[in-house]
Length: 318
Image (tube, rainbow, N blue to C red):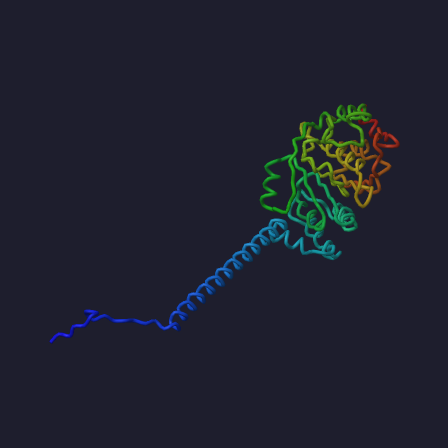
């Protein structure tokens, strides 16, 4: 006999206890909490990592992190005297004919060592001593000017810490007397001793360097270029004239004076132009090959480089 009742079939009644419903909701809640926590943790890690790399990149960019510049940046005190002496010894005894002697290097090194930091050092000519000058002025700024754009680019590529500019000289050594005579005639105008050479039309003035170059207060200037002592070589007339103007046009800086060194002073063009634009009354030392001048700044509107006209300079203009 079949069991028949009013509900029909095998109907089952399932009852859910309130505890089971509560447990499921609680698990989902904890899952959401964990997801939110790990999401927040991931975002914090991402932000901190990004800030770290941004800071590292900025620091690397500002410090130009090469081995040499890193060593220079870490130097907080001047080089000891015995280190300077060692550098001069090896530089002057290098196996090359195109080098300065120890007696030429020593006066420049002494001035750089005493130069207030940061010292601005301008060098005409990329030479055997280029890295030496950069090292001796490790706490200051050293800039080089050279007539060979390819060599300047090569030096900057090989030594990224070197700051070099190329300039196209328009002068010729055989025209020296004419150029000096013209500059003398225009001392009250285009070739005056106090001016911003960026806007100068003086034939001896170098005016095609970056603008910021003319705003720097140079403390030490070395004229050891351009190369050549033949008639069609550019000569060092422009370099010496420009050094004289930069020194006399100094406006600020720790000192109002500028040390100007002229190498190969034994050659007549260097001697005549130095006496014309750097002046004998400012000459404090010479050893035959190197002359050391100390120039003070002049007032705006000055029209004479020298207080007394030297006989050598006068003869150069005849």
